[in-house]
Image (tube, rainbow, N blue to C red; front, top):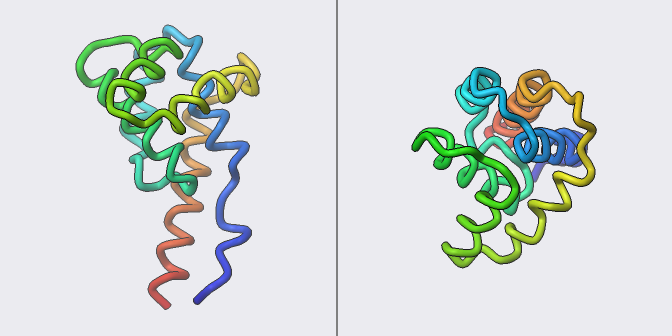
Length: 117
């Protein structure tokens, strides 16, 4: 088994998730969800949160913290829901979602390459 220790950044994952909670920029949201897929997150709870965000956005809804939290709780993902507000509180308002999304994607590609070796 390969060491994946340095092939993720939970701060970046948290920042991308948290940035959605208070943003109204539909173009940036659509660009970010087109870059990053749920399975590219390292933390399983972050994958669930991202999937909920993507579902809301693609259905034309806002992915604010209340909507994401509600979607997760409705689907029984209480542990992931508990991280939503934490992510929002830890994220600076000026974070670039697309820049962080590209870093997460790069880490996911590196993890995939390491696991296939």
